[in-house]
Image (cartoon, rainbow, N blue to C red; front, top):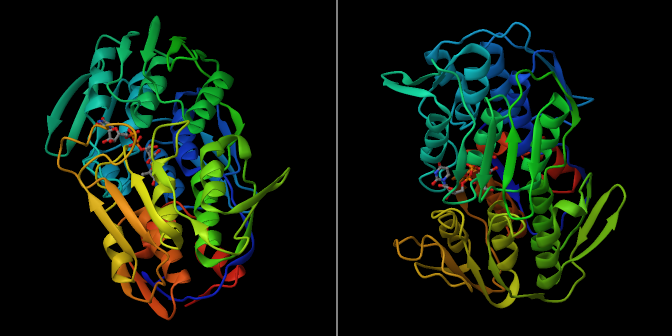
Length: 436
Ligand code: EPZ
């Protein structure tokens, strides 16, 4: 498959897309299967590159992984779990950050784990300091070697009291996956409470874990000595749903996202409505459409759940280039997630970046010289351009921009988009996009 796509824009996207399970839950649930002494079954699993990457990582550890694309059912048999080689892990992990989450389960089940150098999207530093601090506090010993970090737990893992400096999704998952089988009680304060984390907690509970979540971002876990496999249906990918909704808005279209769940998308739906988009919630999904007339400018700030997700920001910025007036976007989760806007300017958008916090709160990046606020002046007609995808969500946003633009754009490095958008080429074609 070629790593570029030609998009002839200027047409509204109309029709239906089926959105399956959430990339950012499915990959973690697959890791959770490692904790079970019996096989697990995960349902509603999309065919995306991240699922393939985690499947490879599990297989390297002796896990039998069997995935049926049509039904979306993935079975993971962990009864033959065994250690893997560091070089093989690095080779299969690609740029994924998932290997860091394997540490707790592997320490419990095998007594050792290896992590290669970690990648992920180029949207900021994306350090792993929170993860290593948590693992060491539980009792893991970390040794740096040429092929990565080697972890062991000679004295076992014991429950901890921990407070996160920032409600990090990955660090919360790290703590959950380690605490469920650690000896004694673990408490976490300032935890992330994204719906994908709630779904992970439900999954772990099915496996035999004892976890309670309080209203103040604190989580308590009572360690148990053994967990079994699970059978679980993944929640829908709310990032993919938001991306299609933004595509409907930017192209003046009408898209029914089958599988979309309102309860996980409150802040997105409020924003969509304020910009001037319309939506109808049905039991089977949500219809998003541009009702005609001008879109409205807004002030938007990304935040941890229940705020407006950072992953919705990039697609929504493309739609805001078509809104009348000045919109303000303050990115408070990643310091470098507005860099993708330079290509939008190349296509005719007017997006200016600022180092200051242009929102109603001061964020961690305000004093650090990062261009993390944007002022978007619209509406600006977009024109075709040759653009290179910088990261997963930025990449899908470039496709939206190319679809909204007059003329034929060439978008390169699109392989990244396969990490999180199932069959996006087929879905675009079904919506009437002209691509080749
Ligand atoms: C998850 O990343 C998602 N990835 C991201 O989605 C998502 O944008 C992010 O959560 C926020 O919702 C996966 O689930 C695989 P974090 P994660 O730890 O867990 C800082 C996508 O496109 N931090 O909540 O890595 C970090 O730099 C991806 O699907 C530390 O400082 O995000 C960031 O500023 C992109 N030290 C903030 O916390 C650490 O050790 C939030 O990151 C870890 C994080």
